[in-house]
Length: 323
Image (cartoon, rainbow, N blue to C red; front, side):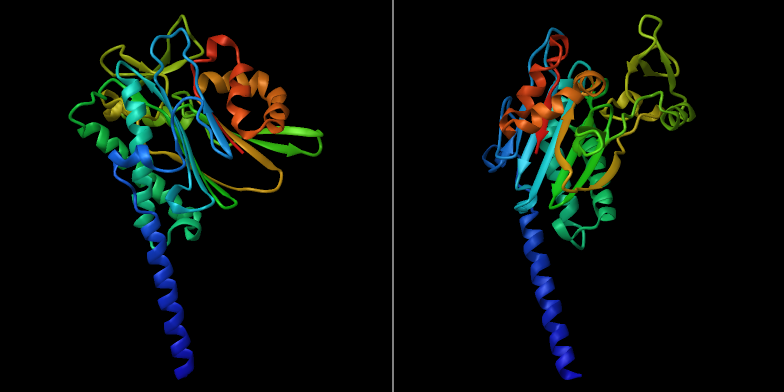
């Protein structure tokens, strides 16, 4: 019995030390240190060994989009965090950038608080970590002294790859799409990984209406349902969940993310993250043609190849490609 107890103590000690080392790796850097973090890419046309980002200014005024790739996220050698954040409203570009910089740090902190971290965390623990991070992010925006998010906000689609698992969380209508080999079709297939959280989704509309918000589309754009205040035809938000937009937070718009877990297989080749305009064109018209192009390109050409294949009117939307 003594030997068994000794082995048990040793195992517990080793496991505890390993857990402490993992938690040290998952310690978030300060925001003023983000510019020096290795593997963190957020500027246009940025690229790494496995991923790239690209956005192009269009004709709609200021580009309100932000994007991020963070190789080695959490100190994990095989950890990559990707995100696309599509701002809207007068200060949407500032909200999107704030979310890009702060949300990953809050996810690190939430993961570090878990009994297990990194590769050891089960999907249920990651679900809680993403939920805590998104909640803390929205709270930060509400209390920010220099950023007005009352009628401005941002979508978010975040994908964390750890080993052979994808963990995804999203609010709004930005989307993650998986390019996977399709043996039956003899090529590549597009798999939508996230749900567009728009006001006409039945469960979203029900929640909004229960909170006295209104959902309807304008006559000149009947295909775009929007969220309106109960007492005024404003602001007309085209999504049911978002960061910021505090004028609608009492009327059914929330920042709670949808969460998905996808175990990767050998068939899965790359992931595309993009905002709604690019995805609308790609998913319905261009992705069957883009999949072999992207699959055949070097990783740093993925986003550019995709962006240049989209109609010019959509090119102000951001794209993140990861292999």
